[in-house]
Amino acid sequence: MNADESNRDSAESEQFRAKLNRTLGTAFFLLAGMMSVAIFVDRWTTLNLRMPRAWYVSRAFHLPLTASLCFLGWKVSALGKPKRHHQPVFDTVVVYTRRDCELCDEAIEVLQQHGDFLPTVSEVEIDENPTLIDAHGNWVPVVEIDGRIRFRGKVCPVLLSRMINTARRQATLSREEE
Image (tube, one colour):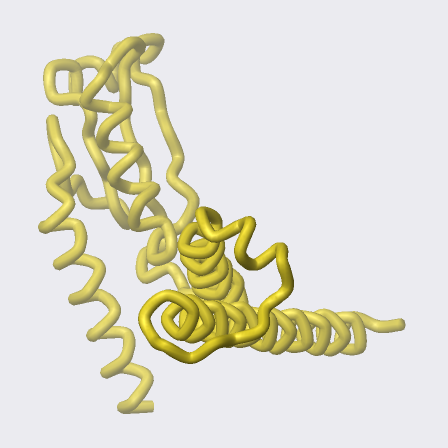
């Protein structure tokens, strides 16, 4: 089996799982709907449904069960949605950090939240390198994207999002021009 066949099999199995999840999600929603109708008819109308004895004994569980079925339907259906695979819009992201730096941890967390659009973040601890300490000592974290320093001291999520969106637009425009 070559790589193309393996990728095709993987894609087919992923499509099957997605379809199965959507089908199961729909089934859970339908069950929740039928439970809701049965609860309504049993409690709010004068229709006399002949339900099994277990129905009347377990009345306290009807609403939580219906809510659980709705939640399961939503959760399982969400698993059936295709995953979006984004290409990184930058080539490199380097974060210059120091030991025990809370701002550095926050910066890396913000970068990881935008991880779909960024390449793997490289962390460089500057404590052992006098040249880097002279360059960035009091300003850590320093975030360098594609060789240019973009953030010092704190990463602003709004500005990072704008940078990513601008780079994505430029990439889209350059592809359209080709």
